[in-house]
Length: 454
Image (tube, rainbow, N blue to C red; front, side):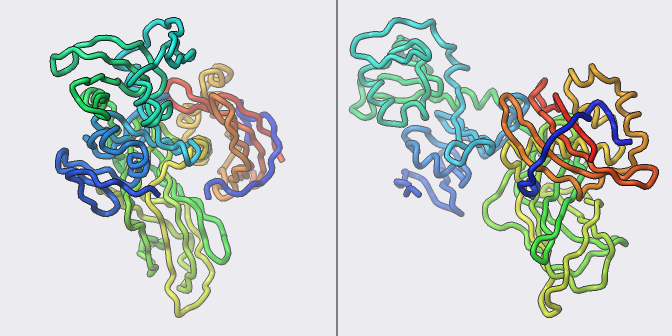
C-alpha cells in the first residue's frame, strides 16, 4: 500500500512534461571579447547574462565598473541567485520572473540607510505615499531621466547633509537602490552623482557566496521519454548536502552500457556563453541539464547510464537507465546533445523539490523524504509512522511521474502530478496528487498535500 500523511485527492489536466538590442555606446577603456565588455580599470567583464540590462540602464555612468565576476549568493528565503556587483549597484538574475523582469537591482539603500519616518507632502515636489518622502529639483530631474522607479526605487529620506567617504559634506538623498549626491562643483549632468553602494556592500558579502558543488554531495537522476523518434528529457543533479552549492559552465557526459563501456555516440555539449546552475541545501534541490538522444543503430546495450564529469572535476553517475532511441539511419551517427546547467524558473525549481521527494521515496531514503515535509505535516505524523506507510511500496517508477501543472499561490506553489508505484505483491498502482510548497526556515517545504489512488 502506497500510503502516508501525504495522501489526500486531485484532478489533473495533462499539459505536457514539465521536466521536459540596444547598441552599447563605447565606454573608455572597454574591450569586447566573446560578447562581453571587459574593463582594465577593474579587470572584470560585463557578461551576456547582465550585459543588455547594463547597456539599457545607464551603462558606466549609472552603474559604474564591474567589480566582481558573476557569483552565486543566498539572497532571500535561502534561495541562491546569480549576481554581479558594480561600483554603484548589484545585478540579480531572477529566472522565476517574466522575461522582462528577470534582472533586478539589489536594494542596498535599505541596508545602508533604513527608511526615515514619513513627512508631509511639499509644494513643487513629487510626493511618494509609499514611503512618505518627497523628491524635487535636480534629484527629481535625475531620477526621471535615468530609470526612475525601476532603477532607483522609492525615496527613503528627504534631502539631508551627510559627510561621505571623501571626508566632505554633501546634500544627499537615499533611495531603495541608490544614494543621490549633489555636486554643485560639477557641470550638468555630473552635478548629481550616485554613491558607490556596490563597493560598500561587496566587501561584506563574501560570506554569502555559494561555493561550487562537490561531486560527493550530488546524486544524478535521469528522466528521458520518447519524442519523434528520439529520446529527450532532463538530467537532474540533486544536492544531498546541507549547504547550497552552484555549478558553472557545462559537464562532460558519456553514455555507458550495462558493463560500464562507453558507447560509440557522438556527444555534442554546449558552446559559447557559460551558464550557472544553483541548488539550495537539502535533497530535492536540483540543477538541471536538458538532454536529447537520437539514432542508435548498434547492438542493444540494455538500459544505458550516464557518467557526468563536473567542470571542476569529480564524477557523478546517473544509473536510472535510458532506453536507446530507434535507428533512423545506419550511415548517420548516433547523437547525444546536452546544454549547460540551469536552475530554471522558480516554478520548475519548486516542482523539482517534489521530484526529489519522490526520488527519495524510490531510493527508500525515508529520512530525506520526511525532511522535505513542513513542520505542520511532520507534527501530524512521526517519522516512524511515515516510513511505515511505505512498507508495501516496492518502487516509485521514475518515468511514470508526470507534472500536470505548476501554479503560483503566494507565498508558494501548488504542483499537481500523476505517478505509478510497484507494490511488494507485484501489482502496480497509480496515484494522483496535489502538493503545496512554500518557503519555511530558508528552504522550500511540502506544506500541504492531497493524494488519491487511481
